[in-house]
Image (cartoon, rainbow over all chains, first blue to last red; front, side, top):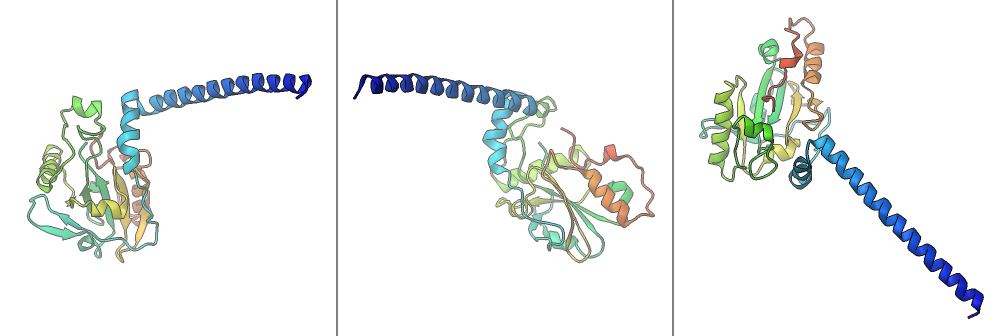
Length: 103
Length: 134
């Protein structure tokens, strides 16, 4: 190895360190920005955590589209005893179907 | 919307697993309003919460409770909230987006207005939310 080769290797190493340093800082900056935006849109760091931990894994968009046959499923009445099917409500009039919970 | 169209349209609410239970992603507003429930682990717990909801808001719509295997939720992608319109032949004629960001009762109202143009409505779209505001 010549002295020139050795000099080039030292320069490359120095530049590599600089590149890695800036790449790391940039990544950290992006993470901070993403965290700040997430907190802003979700309301608080706690809500961001709740969204990522509990909501996101459960969020399945469903693949139903206009024109598809409506799937059927059994439902329980409020009395906890009787049951019926979604399709029991189809036929006479259009049906508005609303999914939701209390909280 | 329900009052405007209940004579010409059927409504069915499906109570599915909780969106913000105490043991998952609880919301401060729910704590403030004392709407505090853990995620139901049994059907009896799910029935009890659905009844609490129905009684507190004097919920006028027919309401069915999803089974503990969440079948209706999975088939329709209903969680946390979602709207559909099904016509008399059993076909989906409106598929709403995933709530809460894409939960738009006004789109259902628009469909109903198009289908039943002669219906006199209160035109108060702010009351179209069939789930209680959170």
